[in-house]
Image 1 (tube, helix red, strand yellow):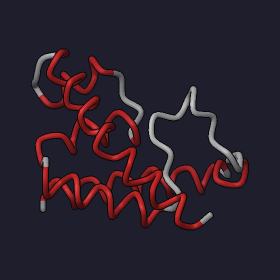
Image 2 (spheres, rainbow, N blue to C red; image 1 turned 120 degrees about the vertical axis):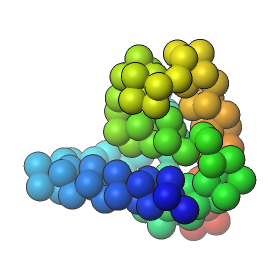
Image 3 (spheres, helix red, strand yellow; image 1 turned 90 degrees about the vertical axis):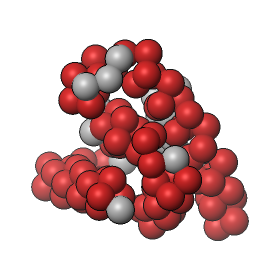
Amino acid sequence: MISSNAARATYRSLRDRADALGVLDTVPESPDPRTTSVIAGTRLDLLDALDELEQQHPVLVESFILRDLGELSYQEIADVTKTGLGTVKDRIHRARKFMEPRLRSDASRRS
C-alpha cells in the first residue's frame, strides 16, 4: 500500500508539474513507441495497472515509477533504492512486461 501511495503521489506530482508547464497541451495524439516505454490510454488505466502491479509484484513498483514516470536514470534509481544496477534493470524490465499488456488491452477496448 505504501508503494502504491508513493506511486500515485509521484504520478500526480509529475502530472501537476507538466500541467503547470503547459506540456500536457503539447502531448502528441499518438505516442512514439521508440521513445515511450509504456503506452497508457488514460491516467486511470495507468493507476489501475500500477495497483495490480503493486499487489502482485510490490518490489517492482518503485523502480518502474522512478524510471518511466520520474525519468530517472538507471544509476540514479540504483542509488535511490540502494540496489545494484542489474537489479534495477531487471525490475524495470519485469514491470514493463507486466504493465504493457494491461495498458494495451485497455486502450484497444476504447478503440
